[in-house]
Amino acid sequence: MPNIKSAIKRVKVSDKKNLRNRMVKSQMKTQLRKFDDAIADGSADIKVLSATQGAVDKAASKGVIHKNAANRKKSRLAKQLNKQAQA
Image 1: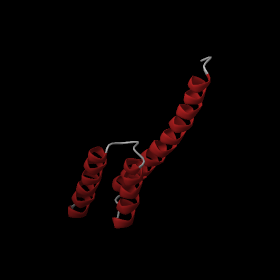
Image 2: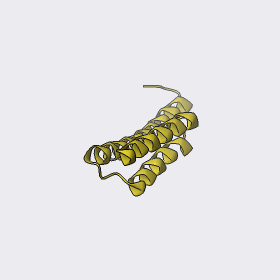
Image 3: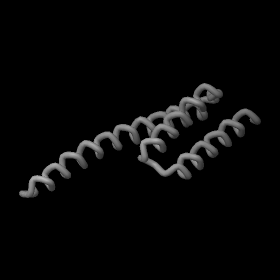
Image 4: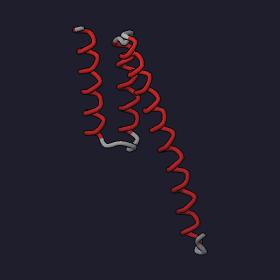
């Protein structure tokens, strides 16, 4: 544990940010799992896709994931939905 006042504050701030980042990432992963389940069931539609893309965008806007990683994830989700629609 740090002894210097500013270092103590940095630990508190980083703990808060870490908690927020974990919550956002967890919400994104949960939505991705829901999308995967919907794809597996064959019940995926544009509403599920848009909700999932929104969760990914939210994580990117908060800096939890990189914007290019978010775009890659969204593209792959759309490809999965299109593939399911073709079948």
